[in-house]
Length: 394
Image (cartoon, rainbow, N blue to C red; front, top):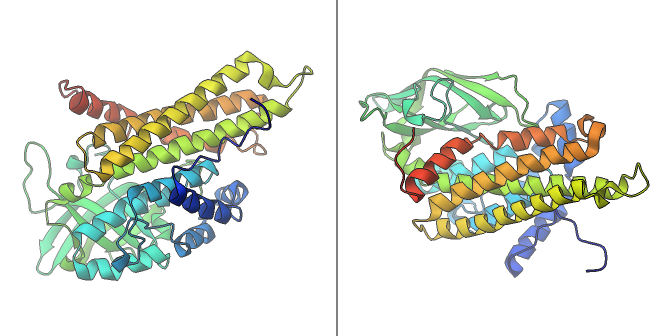
């Protein structure tokens, strides 16, 4: 091998169309790089300018049918955008949540609701937030307490959601709640999905004190007898789980792409420092104690990307293997990414925890991905039960 190696955070394309898409995203991100993202994070402001440009360029809602303003592309286009954002150090949580919700709305909402909501969200005119987590239910969504109860031509919504990214900066909310007039079955409450106007009377947001290393803030969203038109229903009443679970594999492959993309970014940062830092004369990158962990991390992150590629293919084909592959990619990517961020800090020594080197925010974000949007223990439970055929363990 000879010559200057390429950047590890410039991920290879899979075909000509993929290369064209990635080239467009990279060109845009030259104007909104990690320094822009970091400034937003430290100033406590959302990266609105970046979001608007991503929408204007057609990189948000790539999988939404063209009739609703989207690109009508396959899932691998959204995954490519996610990889490029993360590899550039720009893990926009809103991108994951938006790409998770939009296809569900397109497939399961009424024609009138989809036509009214999707185009302004895809164009960036309106922002969308996703609400499922609650203070007590946590991972057990079927134990949620927020309810939507039919009342004439409306639903009355009451309850509280927690850890809702960018809710204070959004106009629309994709709300998953319990069907208030339906009994539980085997301890599982039937779920209903409603689209909520966050400016409506009866809904409020409360900022949470939390630091995920990203500019997007976290909120509680409180519903106090909020009245929602029945036309805002997505899917059938009490059958929201069916519509939502269709999107979970999509969520897994997107968060996997964010994780290993950010992992490559961390390894690139560590490699750059290891090439330059030479306190004893030779660059520290020549030391095996530095070189071997970085090499192993590159291998693990590459394996996660390859596995995720296979998961994306399976999801697109609705193959029975999709859930296992998507969960495995999420687990492998997030675990490797968090180790990559931690090792980047270790290689930088004291510099690793300074604001100047901007590594602690990356560690916070990769650490988040080990338990959000689903914790890795539940991911392994799914694999154990549905792939390995072991008894349910929780």
